[in-house]
Image (cartoon, rainbow, N blue to C red):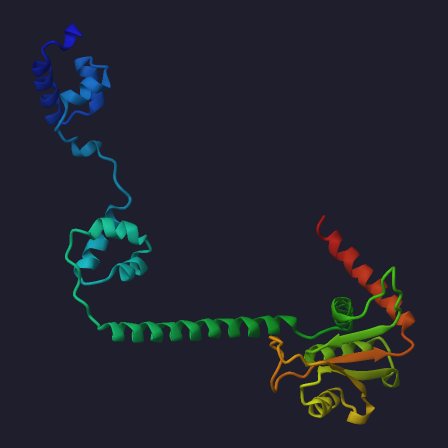
Amino acid sequence: MNRYADFEGLRAQAVSLRREGLSRRQIRDRLHIHNNDILNRLLEGEPPPEWTKRPNAKDALRARARELRLQGLTYDQIQVELGCSKSSISLWVRDLPKPERRYTPEEQRALMREGLVHQHRARRSAYEAARRAAEAEIGTMSEQELLIAGVALYWAEGAKSKAYSRRERVIFVNSDPNVILIFLAWLQLVGVAEERISFRLMIHESADVHGVEQHWADLVGVSADRLKPTTLKRHNPLTTRKNTGETYRGCLVVDVAKSAELYHRIEGWWNGIVARSISRLR
């Protein structure tokens, strides 16, 4: 420690070198000081030369944030403009005066509502464009593609035989009119005659049963008296179910007579789809 006995003299040398523009490393090597605590005390209060400072990537953002704040922008508006966090903006501009309110609280709420409406419209427009583009991608549908689509639909929504309950009959149930029409087109593709197809409605008793029967009959192109007796589900007045009102039309059951062989073909087609699809994963 005797080397540091003349602390003030050593400090004067260190400060002089610092003011000449030397870095800490250069001063350490020049004065042969290898104790960081001593070096810190010798240079206490002396700022580093500019050339030793590393550039801060956020300096430009900080300057721009202060400029925008002085223009009267809020933290939210600055965040949208610069894409940085509000906590950073707060640190950068907290010494600046708050901007005067441009709008009353009622006007601000109205502007927010208007902005939300515009966002919703833009989002819906983007979704609609995506739907149209996706629809165009389908193009013309081949018989093979319809075959695969129908098999997949049946395996998702149709009645399937179980090991504990063999039911080798083609029965398809759905509430979506388009799904029903696709399934009927598929039955026609695989050679099922119209006279083998029967229809039955399943619906809650609280619905307009006769009106709904006519709706489904019109959809599938048969007279209402060709529908088999409707299966009514008992209505519970305490229910919280959502499928009520004028748009509720129950489910249509499509039943194919003498369809055991067709059912086994469906199983085979499905097994083929599964095998080909899994092979693509390898």
